[in-house]
Length: 463
Image (cartoon, rainbow, N blue to C red; front, side, top):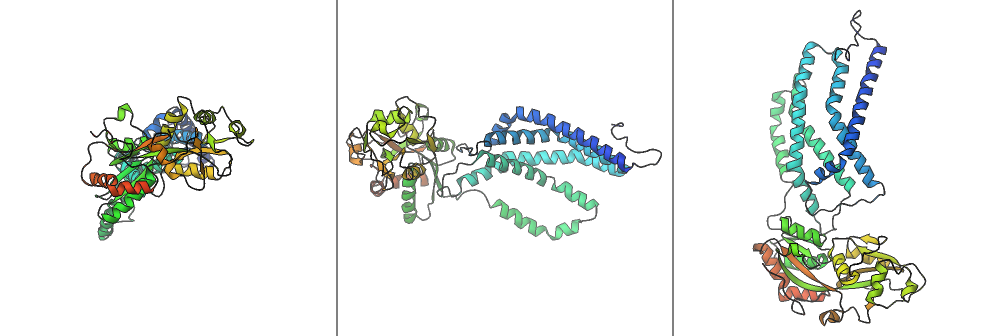
């Protein structure tokens, strides 16, 4: 250390400008080398760090990457940030080594004594943000007004938000030390701080009231196929029972089931049957829905066999001329894996074969319908109840996609709409389910194009 800080010309008692620049260059080189070493270590540990950053997020959240280079950019940023954090003690030492010769003995003692305290307070702030603030904040943002649109955040946005919160809360925890330093400089005083105590108290109450959800709210999350029907039911339910609020959210069937099982949601919505591992959950089938294969209204094709649909989605048939249409490339549109619609399609149509990797993947029935309505050469699949004039539903093996054909079993593409809870429902949750299964609720589902509980369907395994 004596060699590192030997920049003072003993014969003159101070360093020249050239010596300052040489010393600065040396400290910058040392700092850059430490960051590079930390970057290498950080990139090796980037996947582990990313999993660690994802732990505070709601268990049913799903991330996406939009840009081609987004994943590698996130990986590099995580590695760089981790590297800087690992190198920070050495960087602080380099700063102190550069300015140390210009400090008095008393100033050196103060700096050396406050550095460990700064580090401890920063780490306490990061721990508080990670274990307390972030889970509450992320759940609030994820669940806030989800009926507007299903939330599927970009992984880069999520990493940026989490990193900034960890940094800023860590800095906030250093505030007492900053105030102490300002007091030593004479810029603030205890009297000045005490005179503004009420404003700090008011601010703390405002911040404390920014989270949480209404006590009476029933959170219903899951299948984007069930979601639009649940929103119609919830709106009418709220009109009749204005004190009972129901918050409808999307996210997909698997996410909804997980949310119900973990308590993030009161009710999970599923548009697929429960798997063997999920059968311990309480569930009820509220309706049945057909699955429609849709194309653009201008497409001349009217009917396809089930084998033809399977071969199209498996990538074996790539031109509409192969299935009786015009000479044009088929554009395949499918739902994301994990959604109830995709699971039903895989089970009922694909028969163990995989959907072509070139298929355009969408995260909701509405987005599939929108793409098909704008592309004369596309094909997709959505809930039968969501078919409108913007698309055309294909006949399958000569059978029209109508709900009466679903009831009598002649139209084979149909799946259950389930409500799922972790335990037998009680209170407001049970009250909303009772409304959905009541004659009024079932009639509303009929009006929306679904098949009610009493027609060709049985109640789920209520446990």
